[in-house]
Amino acid sequence: MALQGRPVCLTIGGSDSCGGAGIQADLRTFAAMGVYGCSVITALTAQNPRAITRIEPVSLAQLDAELHAIFDYFDVAAVKTGMLLDAEHIAVISAVLQQHHRGALIVDPVMVASSGARLLDAGAVDTLVHALLPLATMVTPNLDEAAVLLGETVTDQEEAARRLAGRFGCAVLLKGGHAEESDMLLDVLCDADGQLHHYRHARQPWGEMQAHGTGCRLASLVTAAMAAGLVPEQAVAAAAERFQGL
Ligand code: PLP
Image 1 (tube, rainbow, N blue to C red):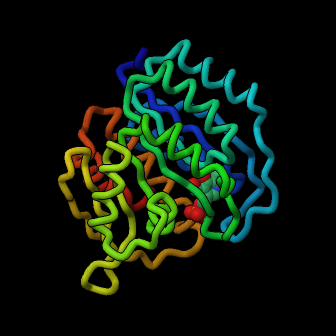
Image 2: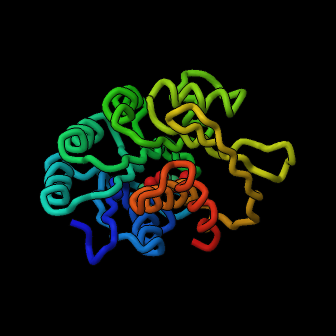
Image 3: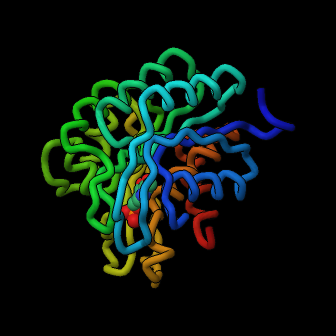
């Protein structure tokens, strides 16, 4: 069911104790976008914007039970995934989504935090690619994550977005290349039909607290917009518009 007319979104990812990224950022973004947010946590992290000092995985049984609790009750319009930790957690999530989720799935293929900590085991990329990405409506890699998914360094952002979209059969939002002007960043969306869309934005003079979690916030904005019925091209434009100040 939708809640009082608000679409229901689910974020699956890690808890960030300092609130800038992960589940906390996603729920804050969902609230700002007027959708109802549910959360399923894969791991607890002890962190501030400079460092992650400890990660405590949530048990697979707890993960599975939380996912079933949500899908048994809610009609989930869109799911976003973030920090997924390892292959075992991805396998549980993929199995439940495959069986129960019919709405949009936005996969933010989070691998390494900007502080340098690993948020996904290096050995779990295969499971991400083969179990979760085939279910995705949109995947939102940065340039480093795109290179891991492609198996080679990204030299041409548009070509990389196109190849990833072709390989995974979904829209790809490839974030953060440099546009012609040096202080401008470029996000490229390749939709599932192979059409390219460009979103240019100024590099923000942000401190570390505001920069922390920017990827999470952008992906959860897109998730909320898609839950409200927008197609990927419109959802990314709406997300770019709302991004400042969140
Ligand atoms: N912690 C959690 C739980 C996250 O999900 C993420 C990003 O997805 C991060 C930390 C990393 O955030 P950043 O690299 O923006 O600092």
